Structure formats: C-alpha cells, structure tokens
Length: 156
Ligand code: HEC
Image (cartoon, rainbow, N blue to C red; front, side, top):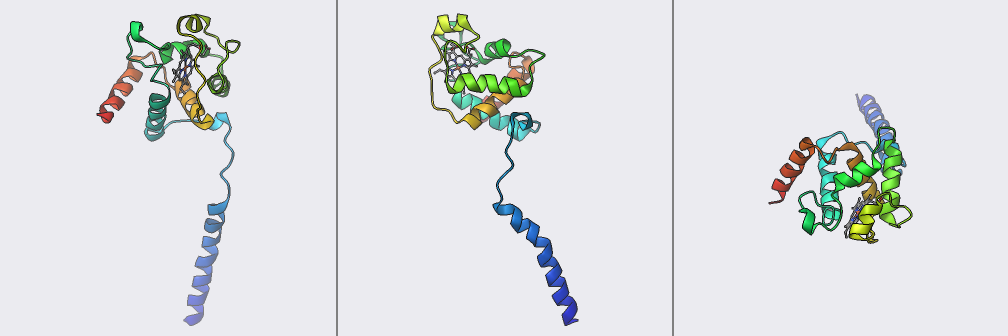
C-alpha cells in the first residue's frame, strides 16, 4: 500500500515537470504572419489601442472642417491592395508610424493638407497590433462602424 502511494506521488511529480519547465522559458518570437485576431477579446483590445493612440487625429467621427488628419479608412485605402500580404501591410504602416518622413509617405495630398504626421513615441508592438487590426477590418464599412459605436457605448 505504502509503495503504491510513493509510486503514485512520484508519477504525479513527473507529470508536473514539463509544467514547471515551461513557466520560465521565453515565449516564441512572433513574426507578423502570426498576428491574427480572430476572437472578440483581442479585437476589442486592438480597437482600444487604435482609439487611444490614433483616433485623437484619425478620428472616424470628426467633421471634415475640424479634422486633424485623414480618417483611418482613407489611410487604409492607400495601403491596402488585394495583393498585399498582412505582413507587408503591417511592416509598411509600422515603418511609417515609428518614424514618419515625406519620402515614405504614399499620401502626398494628406501631407499637403495636414502637414506630415508628427513623430511620437509609440510602442512598436502596439503599432503592429493596430496595423494588423486595420488590415483585418474594413474601416469604411457599416459593419465596422457598428462595432465602433458599440465600443464607444462601453466608454460612457
Ligand atoms: C497627432 C496627430 C496624429 C496621431 C496621434 C496619429 N497620426 Fe497618423 N497621420 C497624422 C497626419 C496629420 C497624417 C497625414 C499626413 C501624412 O500622411 O503624414 C497622418 C498620416 C498617417 C498615415 C499615412 C502616411 C502616408 O502619408 O503614407 C498612416 C499610415 C498613419 N497616419 C498611421 C497612424 C497610426 C497607426 C496612428 C496611431 C498609432 C497614428 N497615425 C496617429 C496625424 C496623426
């Protein structure tokens, strides 16, 4: 009886080793291809990020006269093509946002109207989440606008 319980404890202990081993190990490095948002929670997290970091200027509700920058769906239009991969899209947006220059700009009209986007300090990993979100969501669509409206209600 005693022997079996020792054996049993030993067995349980062996089972837990891989568990402990995985706790301290570094997370696998993600490349852009793996940034995929399919569940609602990460979608909402990305929306919260774009809201706090970008919509001050790229606001979907701002009237043309008071706008500080083109709305984000216009920006998307200039970067999104049916051929572009998500990784390329995320790279191009991130590259511009981390260090905006006139040479990198693909929106000369916007630069003329609003001036070049000012350089700010952003967390690159957050910009990538935002860029992936812009790729995944057609921000000009009614279905996206409904999501935005629903999100705004949670802020009140
Ligand atoms: C302080 C205001 C401001 C904030 C905040 C801001 N932008 Fe901009 N952004 C601008 C302006 C103004 C332009 C238009 C001029 C230009 O294209 O540089 C612009 C243009 C852009 C462009 C188009 C670049 C081009 O010309 O090809 C991208 C992409 C962009 N913004 C992404 C973002 C993202 C993503 C965020 C949030 C992380 C963000 N911006 C936050 C002001 C802002």
